Length: 174
Image (cartoon, rainbow, N blue to C red):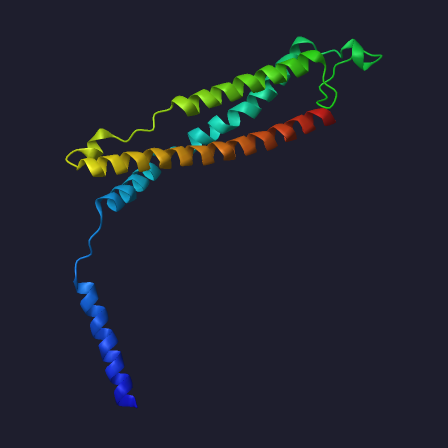
């Protein structure tokens, strides 16, 4: 019984070593995709795209503040007194308009930056490579950069929204 186990273990050991001695063939496309993903990760600036995502909500808060400076009194629709109001629950027309304009400007700017930002790899990385490698590398690099930019900007948008809500909540308590 132990002889059969020893023979089995020797066979497994021999076959395992023999198969690892052969060179592994890596396709050009697989190598290009691996290189492109690594280069996209290395070239990506996460903090910039995080701030681009947070631009919309922060511009909304800035517009609301400008509206508060332009017309600090309550509009006649809201009641009896014309005091200074920063309440986000009951904004006057200038505060609401400023917030809408700020949000629109911030979101439009973020969208334009995302749309027209370059996502092309550096040409030095592709010198001397085959056309198949270049095509696979470029496609993978662009899709990886788009994915990284979208995820980081979404995180910035979530952070900006939460921070904006906390700022408005803190202002409304005063």
